[in-house]
Image (tube, rainbow, N blue to C red; front, side):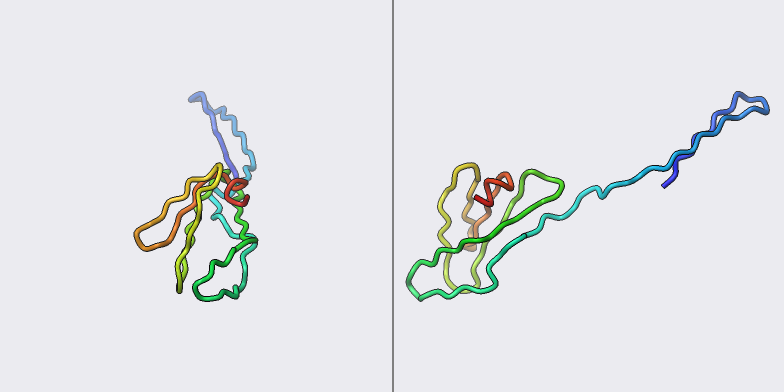
Length: 102
């Protein structure tokens, strides 16, 4: 992208300055970096899920929603994040990327 500025004093004289500008992406979407492909669980027994990692190139804070197609989720409170259980049984986890990944 180029930016051009012209200044005229009303006579025949005009000054023109042109500059190249680099425009960065305004808002990149957050992404999950690592997530389990599949899990083996036993009915009626708790299964610990580990190894989920998220990132966001342009924000220090993220909001992650966790839900299960079959079964239920129990997500305890964790230091540095806000954990909210929603009416449908899913959870949102909000906090810094580092805290959510901890």
